[in-house]
Length: 278
Image (tube, rainbow, N blue to C red; front, side, top):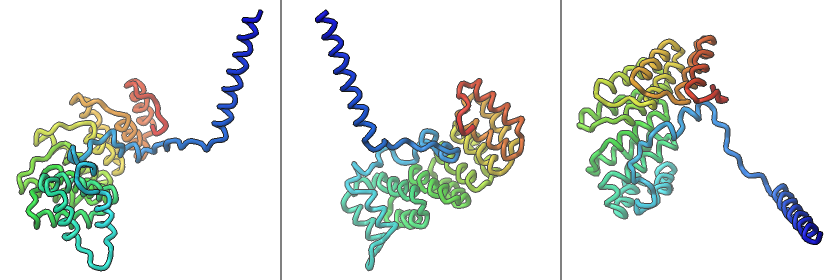
């Protein structure tokens, strides 16, 4: 009996401790929950798109603080500010990161986040004046800035410039350019770039296909979106959640509700399930 009483006492103490802990938690401020992602957020997810930055472009190994530099480039301190002097000073602190091209890639990538194309173009011109050779990472980063501000024409100009300078394009180059067309609703140019990828022997991944399908969605052309979807599967590229969401959205914009339901069923069969966006 004494043993049973000890167990009962232990249970009571355990319950009291658990209750107090829960009470303490309930009085503490609620933790921040992640936002529910809308279709536009999902379409630009970092999980879907590879970074255009150089593999080692973080501020920690640059020798200077990239964030602080970019903020000064965007909001120049008066009165005697010079972008060239600012960049030259950073280069004097970390010459290797600039000469290797990593620093410029990091700067352009940060400017893409802030959608500051005019500043990025000034940095681009400074590169040429300073004799820093441009590589595919630089072009990808600047095309990404064009994408963010929906300047598809400048993105195409950069593709032509790459050809003139003999810089080899890659999948990220085309995906960013297609996405720039997508954000402007220029589905015809997006499809042309998708075809150019094939012509130039560059693998067309789900990222490029998703951007092209989304371009057709914004261009109110569900039939073309379905054609791309079929081509995608024929080439053995596995559709993602973003693929199906963009395709359903294209059907919705084109008032093809029966087709949207068919795509939804196919999405379920592919094992993605019916998410909120779809």
